[in-house]
Length: 415
Image (tube, rainbow, N blue to C red; front, side, top):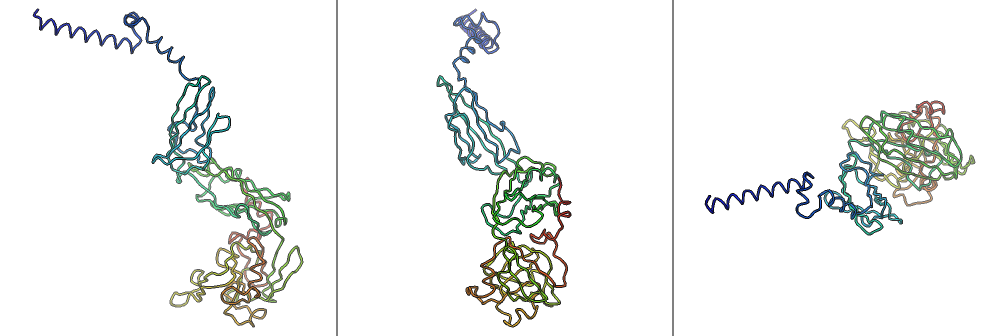
């Protein structure tokens, strides 16, 4: 063999031997081969490395790769056999999410509610008693709007409302598992009154007691809907407690026959106000109605409620109706009226179905009947309309479930 051939042969043998040695080390094979280098096996090296690693054990929930994660209870980080030193949570675009490590440094959670349909990444670091660091990473995606439902509710947290104000929830998805959703909603009152809930349809559920709320009481609404399946593949995301207070007991009685309204508090009449209700051709609904909104001034256009002329325009379009308070979804208001002759109040029913009180243009005169009633009314007060000759308002037309008997009301419960 020539020197060139001999050198190429030795190089090939060396490469082959090196490959065997590397393969043996990675596969944990021939211990004698591994020992030939430094007298220590790879298994022993791994064991020694393990003894030097941190004992801290980090857990991130939900687990890595999860979909449809909760926006309330996700992204919890805990550690055992150690303490957390740093936790970072970001969206995929790098936006940081605020969070806080607990006082004992054993856990972390976000301090803000997460967004739906968003992917988050969590990076956590902890140390054990020897100061050795451990690391953990995870990413997950929160539930998407298409796979979740929320319920908008009234009244708002911290408000004071009238004795007729029901708890009303409107869901953004049709609920088919009504019983499960209703079980996740509780309404209680410091008065001790029994509260029942009634489903008007697949999207709306109202809750109220047998009689009006007791004045001065506090009502609590608890939503524990996180993870509740409202329909197939559609889950709740809300986890919230709402409280509101019931104010004084004010109920007003509109009599379309006498064309007078008696305003009562705790059953005693505090003022009688002349009114003008719906005309014989446009009678006002009868029944118990709850004030749901208040507007110092608002526009009223007949076209929006079906009162149009031959040209399709509204029979009326008043852009500055003063002291208006909504009594129904369909457009029934009790409001000030500055355009009608003062002589009609107490003597003639002339409106398109609303209840009118004498008032002035601009809503700035506090001495008018319209202004007085507006200033002395709150959302949730009851207005009972009588002797109009029209039908009783539908219980779901506004917040008017009081027009159902208690037995009818409870029959609409899903539990």
